[in-house]
Image 1 (cartoon, rainbow, N blue to C red):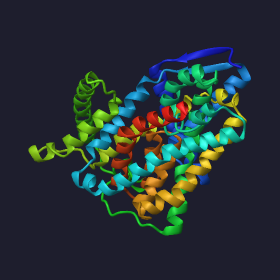
Image 2 (image 1 turned 135 degrees about the vertical axis):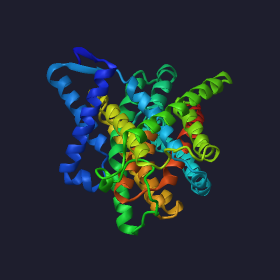
Image 3 (image 1 turned 90 degrees about the vertical axis):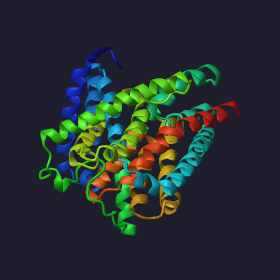
Length: 402
């Protein structure tokens, strides 16, 4: 299908990502469904760009190959900004919800693989395909799917494991981006859960404040200074942790450092204007996350997914139904049936089928319209960053060895 590839360097990919972001804003503003169901603007633009890229392949056999280094830096910016916004009281308040969400997430990793194995058996596919279309690619994302593909291809009779894993993760990311907003809308309509009373957003500027918010060049530069200091320290911490044999994503160590800074620096230096909970930080955070999502989705290779239709679509349909049922009948009730539970439900839809940034994008879209939920933006990244990858690896290994 692909006869030639056009490489797109990092700076040009970054620029295209900005264009895609604005296209998504325009499309979402004009399509009632997207706006009503809180579909994130970068999701609209990113999926549209991916469809255009698919059209180039189908009509001309030309594929775009994006260099996405800047996208990965934006992810570090975003999670560091989450840390800068973290208040100790939010972390304390998040203790019980964090424990519940963690327990539910760990349980769902097992459930996701059980569903994958069961459906794969019903449609006559190898058990390993069920794992690939389960936690390896959905909760695990592209990285976990790619990491496990060689093992599955070599020892479990699935020679195209890499293609199946990547295709499943790609489709999961698309659905995850589209599912969170509608779930939140249904929950809000049924349960009339009012938002918590917080004066400023953690991520994103509410739609009604996007024009009138007070932001100046000093506030923006102050945000970047705080972010860069936290990232430098986070990088050094990440290097130190790596020397112990434990590998963590860079954004995790930066998130931790930013949390510590935001709960110490303002008290040690009370005259310093700290950027936490400011509209300037919300703007930088929103931009970083939005552009990360736009660039991630525009880089999807949908033509690879098209080659693996049929059984893969059946597996993913079962996983989607399972996630929706789990959210409505398990997660939302156990999280308290309140506004925090609603926002986390939207986030879990993005997380269970896509990735942590997708989950946060879903929550951002909801809170920009209905009001902030700062605890959600602390506990969900913590669950995704610390516990899921390790548990997922153990669960995958268990099912593959069975």
